[in-house]
Image 1 (cartoon, helix red, strand yellow):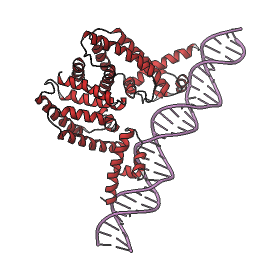
Image 2 (cartoon, chains in turn cyan, green, blue, yellow):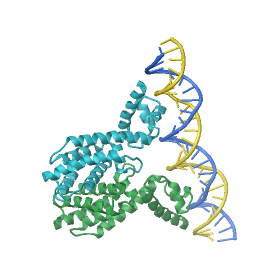
Image 3 (tube, each protein chain N blue to C red):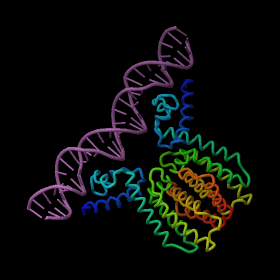
Image 4 (cartoon, rainbow over the protein chains, first blue to last red):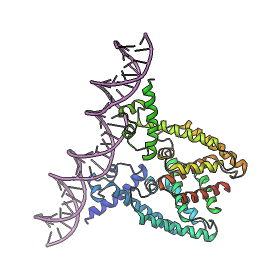
Length: 176
Length: 176
DNA sequence: GCGCAAGTTGAGTCTCCACTCATTTTCGTG
DNA sequence: CACGAAAATGAGTGGAGACTCAACTTGCGC
């Protein structure tokens, strides 16, 4: 692969993440090209369809999330991850929207799986520490994670509402 | 207003509710016209923009929801309403999506207000009965309601996941 | 019935956007 | 350098969908 191609590909990915995070997955591909300083054709050379581009940035984001989940641990790791993710949701429209659409348009089962097992690990540790009730299982934790991110994103919750809502969820996880 | 116009307007509203519930708010207006058995121009005569049509069905749906909330009561009224709403979410894409977008595209503050005060009433009764903790406030209840509906809708949760997720939320509301 | 305003019709316009491709530029190798 | 292959360019194509409007049809008051 030629050096300019490598450079452009990386730049397109970075810019696309920014654009879709800001404008949501319906942002025009042309905006990505403009901000990346390349022609529209170049974007489509690297990512034959818009979906491919979205899938690529989704993968990056989910990998990064899984990694940051992996760095946490202990009784409060799950809560910390939950809080951080929700706080960040508003600036990551693409991830949240696409995660919520649950693979209808984009298939990333293995990538979502990586995130899921990282969260599963945190859940296990929290339950071992007794901060989360034993009866809670992974699917509902993921469901709540996605739901609350979605809500925070679209609802434009302020810090206080976010805190209060998460308090209810955490109380539920603790003593369900 | 002429009698055929009255008939068409009502039919369009009914059909639009069905179409947008089924296909989401991005469904083409033409589909509404087709199913209603009228020409596209007729739809736009009654509702000058697609947004007006969406706003009209949103208003109907929210009024209906508020009314059904009003019929409930007692310590478990809030939980019952919550459960019913989430169960129905999957068949009401338009409401959930548009509620979640929180008035960005559609202004319905007074209508949402009606629903909100109905839920507020249920919350008050639940707290009086001691089934919901005193510290819980209306904004986070609404936030959770919208989030979980959204999640249930897009995530395609099955009955069990819905039950388990709501169990966590209810536990949180009870002892937050 | 008649007349006409109110209502309906649907082909057509306009805009937006994903995607294409003939042409031109650039990279890297001998 | 020179040259061929790889990459970039950007005007162009096609299709979708919101909305328009001139011609037609229909309900209804007289």
